[in-house]
Image 1 (cartoon, chains in turn yellow, green):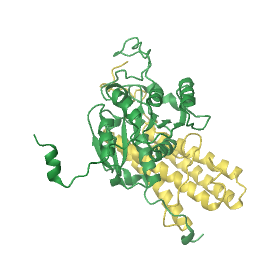
Image 2 (image 1 turned 135 degrees about the horizontal axis):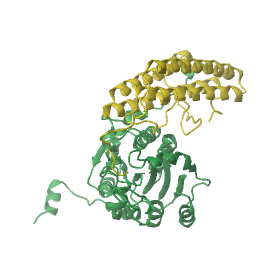
Image 3 (image 1 turned 180 degrees about the vertical axis):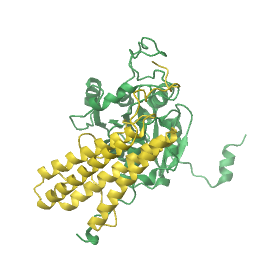
Image 4 (image 1 turned 30 degrees about the vertical axis):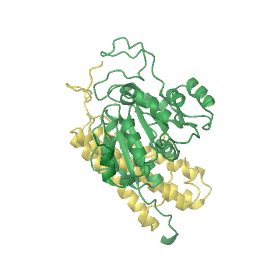
Length: 170
Length: 280
């Protein structure tokens, strides 16, 4: 759903802020869930990712000179939610920081495609320029997340094996 | 654009309806998104948290009242609708939501479900259906497929699955919808419509149990928006619901039956009169 975001620069920024806010909220939810399941390392990773997304939203607000959040549109891209929002079912209680970063990478890559498509579809030149600028930023994020992934340990093949699993139905 | 022209923010955000208690659901559980959808719906309608009550029974999804900043009642198994009915009739000024799962609502609470639909009190019932009893380790529920094979039901139960939407419609629910937890924004829209619609509103949310039914992760590829608008004709709605594939999302029926409001409160002079009423 990029048509509204492409209609004006205000709509574009509202959409971009909505994306970042939604992504931050989802990371926070994941962090809480991981804390509850004693996976502190991944909880901390998700909280860092949430802080990054929230900071992006704040920066966009400042860039636009807005002090109050706009009425945020519903953004759907390649799924039911915004391009930077991790699907709610994509986590596992035994996941590792590397998994969390691989989810973040997928989100950033989706954001690149979103802004690319938006730049192509808009007829507003100011929106097109902004979309290309944001696309370039998201491409930088892709590189940063890839570098980050290189610094964390890759999970072993049996990372999901739990000697005391919650289920006994199979 | 200067600041004065910046679009106004909604008076309350979804976060205003969340409590400080963190859900203990399994990571990836669909119920996280339903909680999010409920808070988004309340924010969309800008309801005052203290004028909203969330009532539940027992089960994973029945934990929702504690995770909201609204008034809550975590009742006994299967009896959420009975408690909510009493609350709404006594306090019609409150917006009353009822939350629970398929085991709680369709099995032990099945009888209350039928009569809540029939009675048509102005409630919104959100059922998170994952076709399994998750909290108690994966027993088949009324909506479990008859051939679902597990150690607790070897070879499957062989029992035909309950069809909650058809039952709700046949029993008199005034609003019938199906949503999917993987689409929290769409679910929020449906729940907001359900709250606003008078009478008993039933929202069945397909909410995967990633622990006991991991195959339900595939639901995101199966769901699709209902191809037609909601109807106010129960016969037409019944035909659609009975012949769809179970993954048709959206508002499927919007009736116009007047809600039941209970008996008018008797005029009483005071506490003494009330005591007299209970005199032996």
